[in-house]
Amino acid sequence: MEPRNFLRFLFIFLSVSLVLFFTWVHLPYAPQPNPTTDLLDCSTNSPWCTSKNRFQPINKPSTADNILEKPPNPKHHNHESDTPHHPLDPLTISEINKVRTILKSHTLFKSSSPCAFHSIVLEEPDKTLVLKWKKGDSMLPRKAAVVARVAGKSHVLTVDISSGEVAVQETGSRSGYPTMTIEDMTSSTWAPLSNADFNRTIIERGVDLQDLACLPISLGWFGENEENRRLIKVQCYSMKGTANFYMRPIEGLTVLLDMDSKEVVEISDKGRDIPIPKAANTDYRYSVQEINPEMMFVNPISIEQPKGPSFTVEDEHLVKWANWEFHLKPDPRAGVIISRAKVRDPDSGEMRNVMYKGYTSELFVPYMDPTDAWYFKTYMDAGEYGFGLQAMPLDPLNDCPRNAYYMDGVFAAGDGTPYVRSHMVCVFESYAGDIGWRHSESPITGMEVRRFGSENLIYFKHSLSSFLYKLTN
Image (cartoon, rainbow, N blue to C red):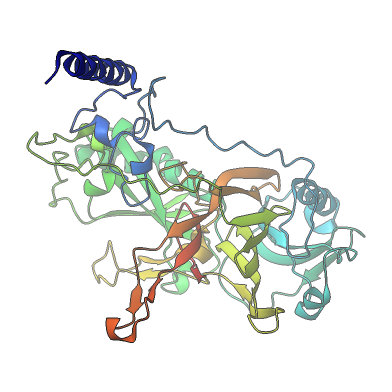
């Protein structure tokens, strides 16, 4: 090689090397994660945090140089000034307050007898009126359906929010009791502690009262001796040494409790010979697990929407996605209610009705164990506990992915005071998988045809039961 060409080649080589070295030094690399813990940390690898991978700690603060930075929590909406935009919109804070004021002045509630509001929800207008209603029309009359207990009796009422009129329905010979209030459930957990015999029994079973966790378990109806009393059975667990107290039951111990008087009616302790399971290896939290260093973990997978979600939410409850639209609202009993689901006809372009109203009517869980401490366990999760009442705030990137839309539930407490269940429902799109089908023409036709098919989904879920409803585009 000639000296001139060699010098030219050497100069180019050194220049390229210098540029590559400078670029490598200044690349914004994130710190290399620990293969066992940091890799699964939502704060450093947020795309990993999906509802299917909730076994990692999420309490580590994110650093400034993280490439995958967790977005801030969704903004909390101020519901004080909410107004209904659709005949099926849930009651607002101002409407619940007005219903409470109207009822407090009603004859039924003027006495000093104890009373509780077990349900204050929208009394939905007639279906024919809702189907005729269009955006821009005047709002249909707003009414509230109320279930209350006064002086030990249940009442069903309808309140006209505009006129203040109250209609009391005759319950007749109906049996049973309304959904428990949050106050019912909470008070039933500590009421047994006021009974000396109960406390003595707990201590004799080797459990410290400070480590006690008790739960109210709906009992159904098992004989005339339970008639005319709102009873519930309470069972307890030891929390010592684990967050998973269900693994440490005080087996055979059942307390029959009067929910109105908070009186302990009966204590059944037929499990004295059954030891309480040890706490070792019962805690399911990732933060307390001892991870084998030989374990290999997969890298995070992130599915992004650079243009944002394909759905919109109008007036807080009307969801529009692709050729679909539907009304969506939180509900204290059902959790989530879908109404007026419609799809655009591909031929006429008109919106076709698909479903007027859909929700989970009940989740019945009968344990069917004939033993004394188990035979009565026949949960009615919606009707007795309330999916919405039991819901917890959804956690961004754990429960719901990026670009999710969050809805709050506005419910009434036992005294009729409205409160907000924040981030109770989220709406998001989900990639449903890889190619669902493929078609290509044979090369002998001379036609280069390759067609692929897959589907995208839109989900809405709430935290208690993670129900997923699917609409396919």
